[in-house]
Image (cartoon, rainbow, N blue to C red; front, side):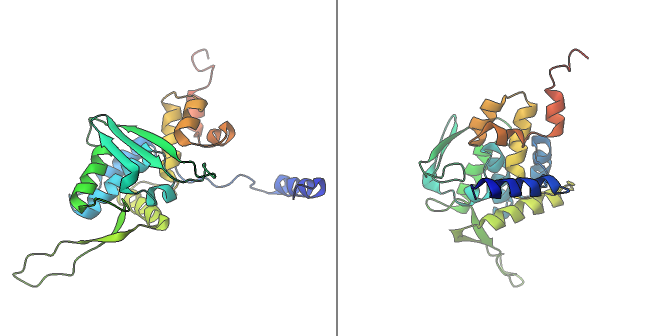
Length: 231
């Protein structure tokens, strides 16, 4: 495919495409994210798990496959926050591993506290972090309800995407949300908050600045326009 004739043909096809740009999923920016998290009611295992998925996924700009692949042994928490060893990812084809740091917050939407709450209620000490939960059958009259069962295997990346879509829909958020919305939203939020491309590249673990630029929403580009304070 590196032959000049093939390259030129493919370039011509891209030029003639009516819509050459890929359709981007809706970014789950911080404001939208907190709406989705606040709409999750209760302290049952499903609610606690889903809060942790949303908040940790945003805080680490994780891909859905990276979230699904996290294991307890990959994560260390302390008073300052958490360190996550991402053993493999799309941006690390050599599987050298990447170290991610997430600071501990002081609000109810702290991702570290959300992770700790999930690990505690699920009683997980080793193995996959995010797991499937089976709800207990309806108990007979007069009997206490049985607790849900926490599975031993990891959620699939498709299940992570389904949870994100479900929680965004339940919060009444409009848009085309997917497993990629958390990652896109985290990068877009960082751009809006004034972080430069190099910082965002380091945060998102992309291999090129050009790719990072495609994640920045139109609103962020307008906010960062050099002439904004002069016009």
